[in-house]
Image 1 (cartoon, helix red, strand yellow):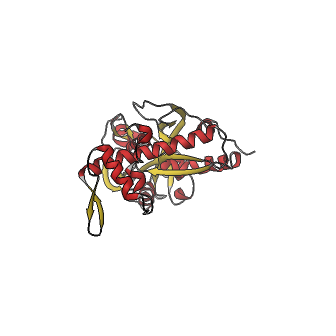
Image 2 (spheres, helix red, strand yellow):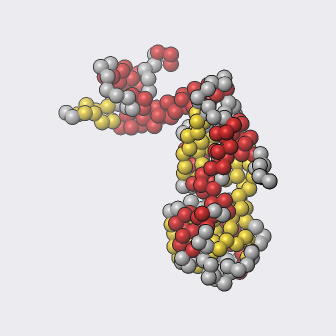
Image 3 (cartoon, helix red, strand yellow):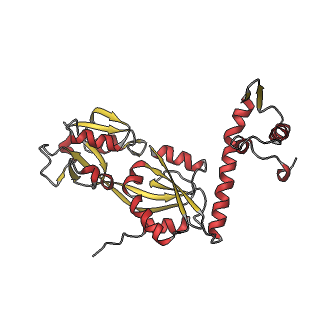
Amino acid sequence: MDAQHAPAPLGDHLHRPAQPALSHQVKALERFVGGPLLERMPRGVRLTPMGRAFLPHARLAVRSARQAERAARAAAGAAGGELHLATVHAVAVGLLPGIAARWRSLHPGVRLVLREYGSTEALEEQLERGVADLAVGPEPKEWTGPVLPVGREELVLVVPFDDPLAGRGSVRPAELADRDWIRCAMEPSVQGRAFLDWACATVGFTPRTVLRTEHASTAVRMAAAGVGVVVAPAHTVRGPLGEDCALLSLDPPWHRPLSVFSRVPLTGAAAPFAQLLAAPPVVAQ
């Protein structure tokens, strides 16, 4: 059976309502792949080992087809399209709200669909699987698709107002060797190591971790309460999240590069969105 006459992927069927022809479609698919994909039970069906192996590839094929359709419609100037974005939580909270607002004013006919991930590794893995048209986040390593640098993200130190460092504008990293640290599961990686481990090693010490959290917002609240100090992206805490604590710049500054990257060339709505991120922000006078 050639590809033109192959039955629709299983992943597509499993998300559709039951219909009279469904069993015939599944049987045709099983004949096509050469074995049973579903085990018929008295009260329904479940996947066979062959079905479980087939399903993720079928889902990827369906997502890729939908992504191709969105890209084609956007490139043709179709109104009412969607742009699917993937990013890490810190970028979604700190950087993208302003960008999304500017995008809506410039391209009101293109809806944004945002997916957030807890780590750069998860972000890259999911983009590779085809869940989004492009990703915004820390610059990926060994990425085979297009990568467009869009600036740098400053990391700042968060301490409570009564901390001895709170009255200063900046602090040298070496001064933090004897401090207790709060770590976040969403902490970025640099050269295969957690950013804080890497940065502290460059000045000769290993950070003493006293608490680990899942989310940056929790880590900042813990720092404000005096549990320990935490490093967080400046754009996430120079706002309501950082109102109850003091923020200090590092001297020299700690930065991580940000980029837009994709599996395929940036076309249609993806191209102007990437350009919007790369452009310097407009400052009101």
